[in-house]
Each structure stands twice: as structure tokens, then as C-alpha cells.
Length: 336
Image (cartoon, rainbow, N blue to C red):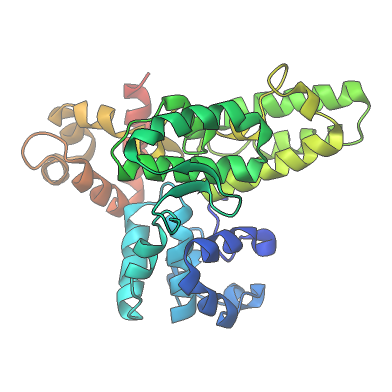
């Protein structure tokens, strides 16, 4: 769970800049909130929306608002964590419309929309233009910086959702909206280590250290803020090591290195150390849940005999440790 980014784990507060840019009304909160480590170190676990890993502090209005903002950038959070954030927002009377309004894509005076507003590039002025802009995005992708690739892709996905226009699966991957397989990530980090070694770069050992860091991590990462930061870090190292010449040949670019699957985080539930596909969970027979969790809990998960994903997410968050362990084991065996 070390991949979850909030104000307690945001090195250099790079993600905070993204949060306040996306939700401008949080700027005041960010200025008045104490962001020193000392602010969090003495807090009890219950002062965090995610007490198990001490993430998303909610001990005052400023931090509750910032935590709510950070959570909007995380692709997946347990339902109990989301509920705690909602309760904190209610307690401190935080206006949630601030977050809803800020998620709208920036428009020009003529009601057009740009994937890169500040640079006025990739304009979408009608639903019918989405497909054309998607094509151009793919064509110009290699010319964009890592940050611009992620931002343009993010806006393209949101505009397409606004107009109910389907996008190619590859577009969501390039836009940074897919799950990271740490196994594939380590393969490409290893390839970078080998390439840097051949070039005689002193940064070869840095890639080796990154590879070692992910040896004991979860199999999948679905925290977009963390993923973007990781892609940016890899991009910086690639440039310094002279590896950009290999993009599209021996190496994928940093975005494709990190967002290395076509799996959408919204299709999965985080449970234990694994991601569980919602569609597959919904297909499991009632007998599976009765045998694993008992008939009473099975009724909560499948009130009408078939799994209700929303109910399942709520139940999973409240299971005692022994049942969680048993279910994780059974799900792992069932998926083999």
C-alpha cells in the first residue's frame, strides 16, 4: 500500500500541485494546512481515513479537504476509506461541489475544449471531433513530454466520457488510465539497467535499485497519481542515461512502461494484495460465498442470489482478518 499518495507521502509535494490545479478552491486550504512531518507523526491512527497505513489525515478541516482532493486522483480506494472521507467532509461541512465543478474540462470562450489548454493544442469543438483528436493524439504522442502525454490523455478520456464517445483501449493506456503490472514494470526496468550498462552510464545501478524496490511490492498498482510520478521519474532517468534513443525500439516510453496493461482500474476491486475483477466476482456461484463466508454474510453479498458488487465492496471492507485471509486464499485458488 506504499503506492498510495497523499499529503503525508507526497515527496516534494509534486502531486499536491496537481491537486490544487485541478481543484483551485483548495489553494487556501493548502496554504493554511501544516504539512510538516511533525503534524502527522503524533496523530493516532483514527485521525486517518485509512488508519491501517496512516494515509489521508482528517484531523482538521484543512487536511480533510486536502485528503478528499488527493483521493480523487487515486484510481482505487477501499470503500471504508471512501466512507471515512465522506464522513469527514460532512463533519467539517466541506462543499463537495468544489470537486465536481473542478473536474470539468477547461473550455474556451467559443465553447471549444483543448487537451492542452495552456498550449491550445488538440482542440475538440464537438462530439464528432473526438475520434479525429484521438487519431492526432496518437500521431503526435511521441512529440509530447511525459507530463503533456498524461494531461492530454486525461482530458481526452474525460471529454469522451462527457460525450459518450468510445475510445480505443490503447488510448486509455497511453493516457495513463490503466493498471500497472509490477512484474512487467520490473522487466522494463531491467531492460533499462542492461541498456544503461552497455552505454556505460553511471545510472545503471539506479535502475537496479528501482527493480529491487518492486520485488516485494503488490502485484498491481492502481494509484494514478503515484503512477504518473513514477513515469516522470523514469523519464528523467532515461534522459540522463541517454536511453530516449531506444523508445519504440528496445524500450517503451515511460508512460507505456508504467501503464503496461489495458486493464481499467474501475473494473477491479482491491482486496488484500490482489486486484479482483468485478465481472468475474459477479459470476461466482452463491455456494462459493456461502462456503467461504457463511450463509449470513453470503446473503448480504448476494441478497437476491446473485452477487451485488456494491454490496460486496461494502462487506469486504468490514470482514474480520481471518475471513479476509480465507477469502483471499479461496479467490486465488478459484482464479487458477
